[in-house]
Image (cartoon, rainbow, N blue to C red; front, side, top):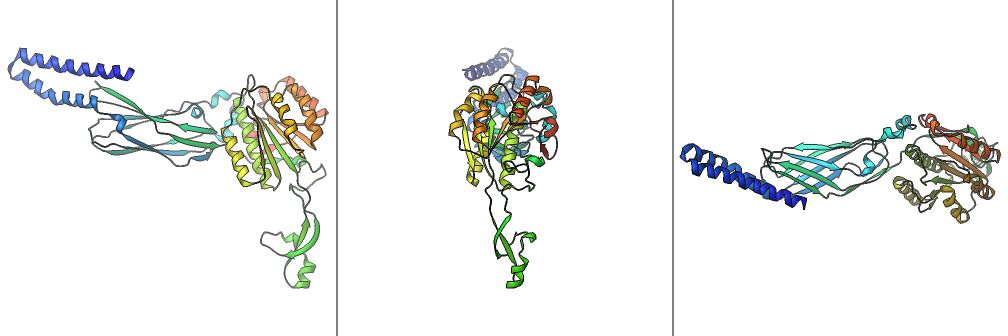
Length: 420
């Protein structure tokens, strides 16, 4: 409706100008008046043609250098425009219409210096490019998207504005150019403290591996990748070829990561982003150590990923890219619904940005079903209340380890996860 009214107004404006100049030439007469009339006639005709020129018939394509990236990365976007008829245009202004999720920046680990002031990570992305098409049928422009935040971002349109030479007639059209940008959480290097290097294997464990193999049961031929310390020199000398010890594999540590994705009053969204990154980083770290790990995301719809295969790990990464806090109720309520669905795990590792009294009663059944329960409390130092400190101390006295992960830890490389 608004566009139709603008079209009618512009048409009346052009016709009134044309009629006024024609009336002036008729009543004034003489060479000068008619010279002005015929001199401005091509301009009036162009104005009329420009008014009826359809922008919607243009073809726009958006080319993104990488549709799947990590938080904090940069992508280059190229927009190509093609039109059928080379109608002369003085200028065009192209504006990318960004979703709400892109109006913030992710400077990877550097963003955590604002953890106590999460509003500083907000920004207004405004990409406008001026192009002077003239008679060209094909033209393009490009721009960079820097400091991309985590999420699945839908780029739905490009807005085009243009006008005639005098700015009397203005046209605007929104092209529905749809693309999707998948930004996975950044994986930060993780370093576990000595007593956490072998979660679930006991405090006496000194090896930093998750699946121990220390009982020799035989020998086999050497294979690339075997350690020199594994060579069985007696068998090597006897057979005159390099032989490697075979070990009995002990049962590895099964670890379940539980991410709190429930919204609560006064939630620190930058701390939540840190919790997601810590979950993704720990998941990758544990898999590199050849341990079995699962991921449970507790939110509006609780989703569990027993990450034993590459395909399941990929699905877990995709879910971590798009999750946002849900207003489905307190975390402890949702967790109670999941307790009896879970298999017994050696270690349950919670990742949360909030602690309250409900944790104490909820953790007890989990502690009875598991070998060890650990809570990673991710929050800015200034945001940790005295009540949460007391709750953490109380849970520690009941055998539940609570590890605080603040901006001081997150700004380190690697991020050190240790008891405090």
